[in-house]
Image 1 (tube, helix red, strand yellow):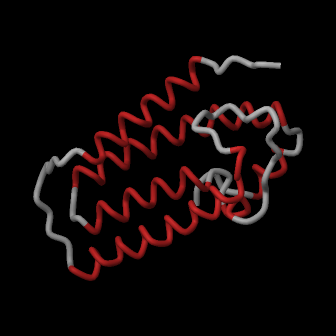
Image 2 (tube, one colour; image 1 turned 60 degrees about the vertical axis):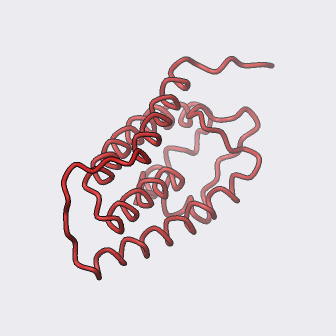
Length: 149
């Protein structure tokens, strides 16, 4: 069965890509000065986020998709990174964004990451409706695991 990807999936991914592009534009809103220790703590946050996201990516393996709709042959994963967060890849991207924004003392990147957080919240709400439909056990998983961290 070849199921057509819904328009809403494309819309979420398109907005997500535009936000990623905006994040990497070399813009500065205001020059902010953060203490050196705080800048370096942003690098630590970035490192942990990359590790956490990498673990989640490895767990998904070939079931990875940019779209919120679950893949047809997908299984519900509740162990590893998915035991800590229902959406560990979104979590890793959000914390990576904040970590690098703090390291680079960029108010612009902090704001863009805030917008990404809002997008991922709504994308995850949509995704969870679909997951609830596909996996009856998702409700129990949702009760014991946070959306992000």
